[in-house]
Amino acid sequence: RLKTFTRRGLLLGGTQLALLSTLAGRLYFLQVEEANRYKVLSDENRISLRLLAPLRGRLLDRFGVEIAGNRQNFRVELVRDQTKSVARTLDALATLIPIDDAVRARVMQEVKHKRGFVPVIVAENLSWDDFSRINVHIPELPGVQLDVGQTRFYPFGQETAHVTGYVAAVSEGEAGQDPLLELPGFRVGRSGVEKVYDLKLRGKAGDSEVEVNAYGRVVRELSRHDGQPGDDLVLTIDAELQRFAFENLSTENSAATVVLDIMTGDILALASVPSFDPNIFAAGISAANWKDLITNPLHPLTNKAIAGQYPPGSTFKPMVAMAGLETHSITPQETLFCNGTYKLGDHVFHCWRHSGHGHLAMAEAIEQSCDVYFYQLAQRIGIDPLAAMAMRFGFGHPTGIDLPDEHGGLIPTKEWKRKVLHKPWEEGETLVAGIGQGYVSVTPIQLALAAARIANGGYAITPRLLRPRGRFDGTDAGLSAQARHVPPLGVSPASIAEVQLGMQMVTSGSRGTARADQIKEPGFAMAGKTGSSQIARITAHERAVGVRKQDQLPWDERDDALFICYAPIQAPRYALAVVVEHGSEGAYAGVHAHDIMLKCQQLDPARNPNRAQVARDGGGEDGGDSPIPGAAKPTAAL
Image (cartoon, rainbow, N blue to C red; front, side, top):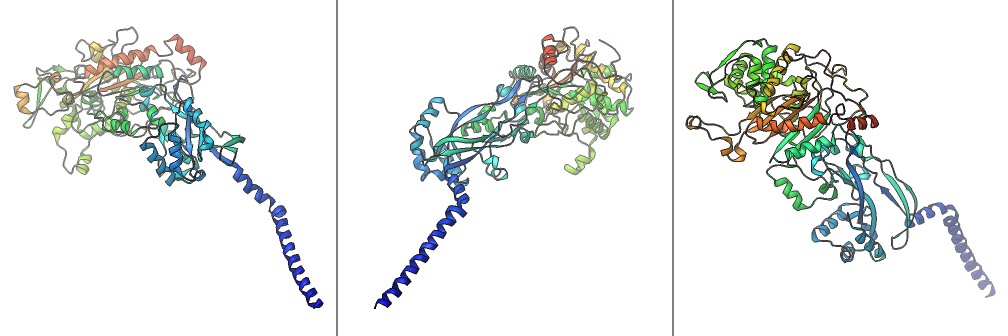
């Protein structure tokens, strides 16, 4: 019996020893061999690694004035993995700040589609009082965390909206492309410069290690790497001129203007009316505000300066004149007769002046905007050579400006009509195109570019919004397009000079259609061309009994008013185009062009001592008002 007990005792003791040895080995393995692994796991429960959104780069005007920046944003976020019930947490949070049904529905939707550890914004742009109140109650709000971030701010609001564009929240389809896009409140460029240069403006994300307690409340920050802010971009825009241009057009229901430097292609002002406040997108636009914008019949979200397409009317006549001279279809001195009508087959084409203009040479025809002269000239040229000249000056295709959603307009050809409409070209359509009507459509920026290429002697500058050398300082003031190695358009100086002369006579001649709009200040005079494009079709009966005057028509049936110009006449530096929808006649747009072009020249650092000092203290290029060496000069000074 003793032997049996001893044998059992040894067996039990051996088993116990084996178990103790196994336990000791396991403890050694966990405490020594796996110490680092479990330390990491412990730290992961105690330490939270958070991605930090980089500061978005600013947008500055040519003199360094901020037109898009950032400001402090107090916000409250919710992390699904840190709360047992999102709904109950929202209920508790609603006792501290207002949370309506729309916000609740949005948050519930976002937490379903985002990974559990990714914070979802519940509210932002909070007041300091609301932010402090939530901070006090954080222990009672599982999953809630507070953040002080940055939100986009546009100090000029709607005045620069179509240039800067706006930023908005990341869509579901974009979120998986970059971890940065999953950050709560992160915004990406949706229009304007913000969209085109979004990657440059974003910067690179940083990170923060924070120690949290059992409730998820931050105890302390262990380390922080702020990442790399986005690049600050200097634009060609002159903020003061931009503001003036926008305010000048704000009296109209719908209008657009573009001002550019004829030597560099720098856009100094680009305004579209009506506009919108981009700050409402940065803060998170409401459904009601969005509906108001997209249902507005005047389309405030559309940048009419680059996407509005209009028949150019008589502002197209310089292109016809240039084509006539370059194809040797006419000479500057040859006269054509206008008695008020021109007959082609059975159809009668009318001049805007019913009594006619008599015998006119080219410069006089431009001055008085004679339709019959340009009917006859267009017929001589033919539509294809006319289209080729128009395209050379920037019509019929996008200009290439660094803005999204630019439209190219339309310059028709025989081939275009055959391919698109499956019909042959009619000769009468050539006559209509000769006065900028029919199928022809252009954008305001194309009009401004064409005026600039006429003014600079025929050099193919392209418009730009991003300054390649930063802020303006005038270090290469007066450097011509020729000296910048801009390619010429291949139009003879004599043809350019004749069109320049005609445009001078428009504003300075005794019969000029815009003589009332000429700038009277010495040294500031401008050359220009009026235009009106017919919206409502005039029937034969209406013409016979008398057409109602423009001011008797409903606003949306009146003609569009257009005006192109450049200044100063003797040493051109700036070009401008204005389009006023349903403005009735080109001279009406000329009133706005007068004011904006005068202001543009007054703000020229070469003329303005204060701005010259800013230029010297700032950094950039392109001042002065020197003409292109060797460029065509007008044959007469008026």
